[in-house]
Image (cartoon, rainbow, N blue to C red; front, side):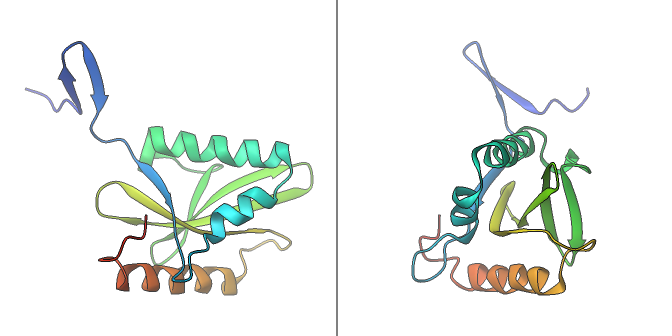
Length: 135
């Protein structure tokens, strides 16, 4: 008998392996990734939102050009529109959830180390406050 990743409930099929993208919320209440997305022009925001939607459907199967592992469990969603390159960094937690930490406009060939470090700091903060309502 093969593995079947769906629950069938009264004529409804639910993917039990679905992923969910959640915005990281700082202690004072701001959500850096959400603020970044709202700052993008309409076309870039639509592209990045579509990439996040694809992630929620495909989870860890999502690879380049949409997603890339950077360092120590930090990943990035990747989008480009003309010469504009946007990134949203994230990490995984138990329960098929990705926590979107923040975003930035990429201006160099490699993701700046300070952006990766910021995502790691946000992850540490998130995990330390995990018991609080952070979603």
